[in-house]
Every structure is written in structure tokens, then in C-alpha cells.
Image (cartoon, rainbow, N blue to C red; front, side):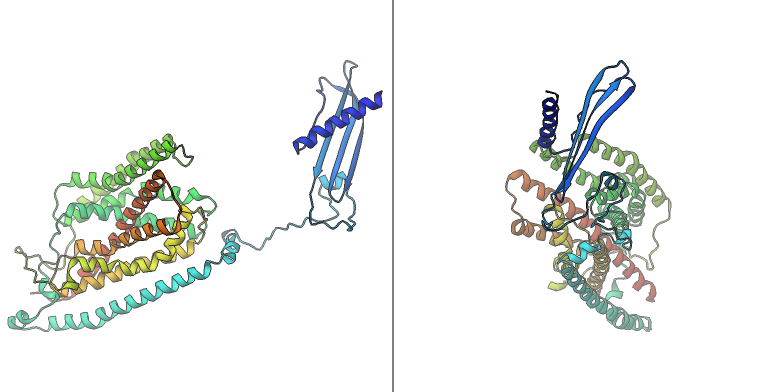
Length: 494
């Protein structure tokens, strides 16, 4: 009878452990001090797994005997093992304390550095050759533009400056034409100078944010496995970079002759960030309505607003204070009181064709990287090539600068001195090509159905396009500002 009871308990424990496919530990409750333990431990194993049994009697303090048994079932499921292969047996102590007869097949490679832990993915993916093709394509564009700018700076512009400085008579000056004739109007304040200065401040903030974020990503501080690390770093940097935004906006607004400094500071704080946040909040409302797990919690939105109003806005006011306190930007030539009449322009020197043409070359440098970035966002693919991205970022800055300087020189030679807004829009028009490519990607690569998903795609795309517009436009303006200041500072003006 005792043997049947014993077998029944063992069978019950076995069935219980096997039904849950996990380690089962069934034991009686031990209350008080243990006086005596009597039991039996059995180990049964083969090439497919191991089976361990414990059963015994426990004598407690009150002279009460309690039955205790435990069962451990472990299956290794080695489907690749050869049935005829005879392996040496291992006891329980060897397994638990690491004294295994057969070593583990997994070995740690101590030669791989932490920063290079993702290189095996880079080497195994077929997209690496495409990335190098993209880099070579961008470098060819940069070399072409650099050659054009060098030819203008070293040959044409040098000859112009030498010819203008050698003029002796007024008659010779009246016969000349070109960019020197607009020296009295080239630094005339642009129309809508308030809006331009606000855009420049926000663009400077975005430029520094993107540069620092990509630099940290290249050094390995932002892991590709943590998809939120890149965005978190970007948001924190944007909050902390309010001071440069306020300083640049106030400095240029003062140089444009503006006096409404309070309006300038408030627009710098709330115009572009407010548009981005309003768009993002509407997209989040749609996610809430659809019951998506991707919706940002309400507490996180409140935290972002607190960072914006409590940190970014005060820092912007501090930067604007120092910007307005400093003296205005000194220009190398004086501005005439009466504006010069601009002659009739040919088709290719008009504003709209120049702006449309100016964004083609910068977009040609980034469209391959743009494909992989959109894949990582909408196709749930991991983006790990931050080194390529940082290199393309540098190439994009150079291309935007050189293309804008080239077109600015052509317009100045055509006696059109309205270069401020044109330089911003010329490189900023790259964002329009980005938007067109995103629409093409939506219809050709994605299978998105439903009104809510479509609105989400284009809503987030508009945020990226606005940020990209401010970023590239600011690069073009500062490049042209440096170019115009440089050429008019070396020419002799009576």
C-alpha cells in the first residue's frame, strides 16, 4: 500500500511538472525546526535531457512527520544531435558548479570593442554598398559645386575686384555694371524682417541640436537598439539650446532695424515650436482615439510642456537679452536712403526659378539616406549607420552653402540685391523636394489603408519637413551673409 501511495505521488508530480513545461517544486510546508531528514535523490539522463527526483520524510519539532518530494524535469531538445554519438555523462555537481566535461559552444569574443558591437550587422547587410554609392554621389556633387565656387572666387570675382579698385574716373564707374553697383542697397533690411529673424533663430537651434545628436550617435552613446534614445537626446538638446535661438533672432532683428523686441522674443519662443507641438498633439489625439499603444501618455505631454515653458522659454529670453544689448552688426558699406531700381530680369535670374533650382543639388545628396530613414520610421527597420548619416549631414551643409552662394552671385551680377529671403528659400526649398519624395514613398513603398493612418503619416511628415526647411534655410542664409560681407569688404567704394 505504501509503495502504491509513493508511486502515485511521484506520478502526480511528474504530470504536474510536464504539463507546465517548467521547473516544478512541490514541497510540504516546513514549520519549526527540522529534526530529521530522510530521503532519496535520483538522477536519470541521456543525450536528450535530464530527469531529477527527490523524495523523503521530514521529522519536525512536534514529532510530526511530513512527506516532502520535489521533481525537476529539464529537456535540452538537441535536434541536431547524432543518436549514435556517445557523450560522457555528467553528474549534478558538475553541471551546477561549472565543471562540465563538454564545454559550452558559445564563446565570448573579447577582441570586439563596445563601440564596434554593431559592425557585424553592417557587414552582413546588403545595403552597405548602396550607402557607399550614396556617399560617392554626394562627394561628386560637392566637388562640382566646389569647383564652380572656386572658379568664381579665384578668377571672376578676383578680376572684378581688381577692375573695380583700378577705376579712377567717374565716367569709368558709370560704364561699369555688375554686383558693385548695388553696394548701396545690398544690406538694405528685407521685407518681413521679423519673420526672417525668427526663422533664423529657430534654424540655429535645430542645426546645433542635429549636429550634437549625430555626433553623440557616431561615438556610440546612442544605441540603435534603443529606438527612443535618439529622439530623447534631440528633445533635451532642443530645450537646452534656447539661448542661441534667442540671441541669433534678436541680433539679426536689431540689424534689420526692428524695434519690437518683445514680439520678436515671443515669436522665437512660440511660433515654430508651437506649430510642431500642435501638429504632434493632433496626431497623438488620433492615436488615442484609435486605442494605439504608440500614443504618448498624457503625463509625458505635460512633462514636455513643462520643459518647454520652464526651461526653453527662459533660456530664449536670456539669449534675446544679450542679443539686443549688443551693438548691431556693422556692414562694410553704407546703405543709400533711396532704393535702387532693379532692372528687368531674365528667366533664370528671377526669384522663383532660382529657388526651385537651388534645392535640387542638396536633395540629390540625401535622397538615398532618406530612403533608409523612412524605412526605419515606417517599416520598423533598425537604423544603425550613424557614421554614414553624419557624413551626409556634413556634405548637405557644404552643398547648401555652395549652391546658395553660386546663385546669390548670379543675382547680384544681375543687379538684384534682394538676397536675404532668396538665400533662405533657395536652400530651404530642399524641404519641398523632401515632401514630394515622402509622398512618392507613401504610394510606392507602403500599404497603408485607413484615414487615420494616412493622416498620421502626413502629419508627422509635415513636422519633419518644417524642421528640415528651417535647418537648410538657415544654412543658406548664413553662407550668403558671409559671402556678401566678404566681397563688399574688399572692394573700394567711394
